[in-house]
Image (cartoon, rainbow, N blue to C red; front, side, top):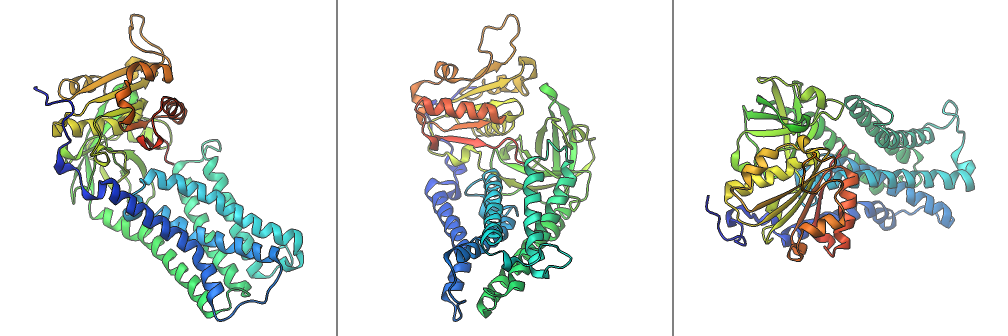
Length: 461
């Protein structure tokens, strides 16, 4: 087909107000303000109330402050993991989940400092450590601490401990709910800083909001999914062991869907089963309402999903994510770098450009173990006939007669294929963490600004 000018503007109808940089920055600032405000709220209530506890030592007040800050962060965690689109859209759900993991470490650190200062300097205030003889409200605080330490350990070491994904999720929810309930009971039971009416109202409100998040994520959202089932209509084997499942909506199709986004997929189970996984939607909205997920059997349920038979019922929660050309309406072109099955959000964006006749140039650098393992290799070749797409394959082990690049993606390879004009283009990366870490370091060394690098987190959970 005839191509327009390689520097033509993107189709204007696909650039939404919500995706424009100023609007995104405004929403980011709003949610950061809300987050810091929620952390500060307990201290504002304590310092501004009619009753103040008698002054004590700085260390004691520091310990109490750490405890209140930890409880605020615990309550916030349920919002971060609740898949609330108003919250996740400005940042990207993958970034919110990474932030959730980092905040979890900070929360446990604050709880340990709270307990540690009391244990070292004010041990009589802790009373008995034996849960059989200790005061219930103190034991409740220790139960909360143990729950959140267990959450950190089982989450960070899940794969090493060989915990089944489904049962890890069940355990994660139970530990989080038990830990938060125990923490609130501890604060209210101790009473010194929570005897004030306004402080009790604060924690009652926090508890009600927490209950609301639980009801939304574990009851109301599955009910909505139940009313909008999907049906698997095909299962196509791709290169590299990848299977593409195509689903047709039997209820409402996805709305506000952008190319490159992902959704949580549950196949053959009730939406209440918690047997769901996040996968990139490998097709573009322009080709809807059917959607496709390209899945590689990397463990847990992914092996089972690649064997799904057409006709199987499925449930979809989404879309989420910001790894999309629609967030880059002013870009003159794109650099896309993918490794293995990390090609799926890239292929979705390329599908959108193909459907829209978007003439902006794209340089795709695509790494795989071998050339034969490269999913969508032939499809990329066909796309290159329709859009201004340059594909640079980088097999780690090349064929004997291979004349192209091979090995690992490094700065020298990037300099060979990315001319100086591309430094201001968005650089969209998706693949295994070792690859993306090395590529980011190389791009920064080449003078690409950090704001021009967009990373889709490959291993979300």
